[in-house]
Length: 322
Length: 304
Image 1 (cartoon, chains in turn brown, green):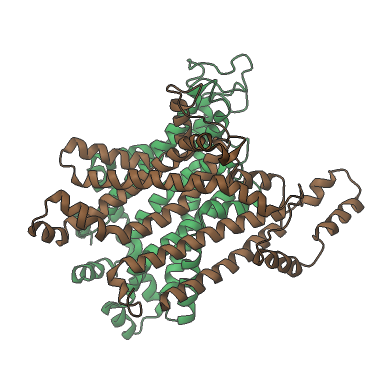
Image 2 (image 1 turned 120 degrees about the horizontal axis):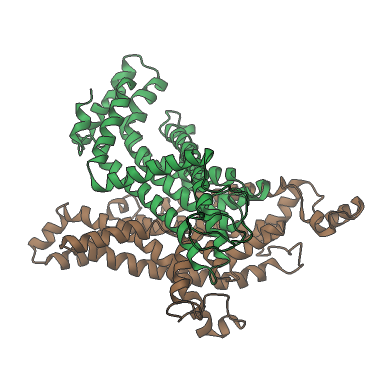
């Protein structure tokens, strides 16, 4: 328990630190949103009035206080540009981004774990080189290019085997469930296969280490075949290590998702953030960046705690065990 | 464990005079393997093309051929032209140097930051090591792209955004990976005996502790270079990386994206080049792992 509390305090401290960094980074911005909105050749008085309206003329600390106070109440404020509530905009975008990340993760886990196990069990040299090739090349493809290749192959209309839509999200959102899901297939495959290739390499190396460690020899001495030993004993033993890898992979996946959302014209958090950044929509950008950072810090926290719980060697340091 | 310790003892305390010899041995071991050969050839080509592109490209980057827009590959335009009539091959050649610069600078920054953080984490001052550990643990889960987006707000699209974001992200990663080895070395007998002989902590750090983390750092930095090349293409596409007008592979890839339906072929080259280079860097890193390990590579032990 002590570890969990310590780790949680670290999480909160990191959250505060990153909020200050984000806030500070946005204040040193040259042309702010007031200048953009007023237009380049507007009289200076107009810009000043707009700034006052938006609270941009208050001291930094007061602005920071306002922002944090709102965040604590779950209120991210209003977009300076559109006047719409950022909370609802972000919620709408998240309803695309999070399913996309979840689907991508599922693809990565299925591809990574199954191919990782298969690669460990493979004995024929040709098969081994095939797995090796996929592991190295799959993980080295830029997400943008991987997405383009999938579009060239599978996009409706222009692809060689046109099955899936490759642009946009259905008007009705998730009410059009089939359409929404179909539009996420190619993006999810892109991030999933690329990350799955890396996960496969980790799985294979973790299982390979175990194979030479004696644990699996013991399992095989107890009557398991090689395949059973790897599947039943090896995977369980490798789990703590793999959870850490998946956690890190998750952070890496966000780069892929941002690029992929733009490529497939999905109005998610990633593409929204790029738009808001271009518009200099300060409050929207800082709230979105903070949300994303908070999300990844939370993932890091959960992964560390899970790692502790799953690894029996680390468990002794937890008071009273699980 | 005993083996690892004796191995560490053998590496540490060597003078820098043999560094060149060691590098030669490592390169020879890399060349002896098929994969290592591939990696060395690709990386050497990358360097050569970057240097050549400074003085010569088949076509000038800035002359656009209005009569030959989207031209097919020909003797004049080896890979054809793009939508403005610019020579695709020349832009890819020139892109090589931007990407090389980004990879080298990002890795250098990551190396310096990673070493400084590692040194801080094994510091004898509990305050310094405590702060370093908290900083690394807290920030390690922030994705590099997020750091880049935060930086891009004040800085705009620039090469510096990619370099600094990658440098911070990979530096943190480096410190986390090197920490166990640094701690192991810091708690070892030879560090104790050096200190007992009157050596300062700084000299112990430089001569006995950091050298032990070097094999891991080298491998990790080589892998980071590959990630930096990938990051360049992603960030440039998002509009926060290499600014428009500066040749880079990410730039070539991003501009070709708009015309994928009409001219799918132009999409092929930049992506293929990035993939081959990143594969080479990853293979290089993997091969390096064995080549710089004195246990796996006996030739390294011969260099006194």
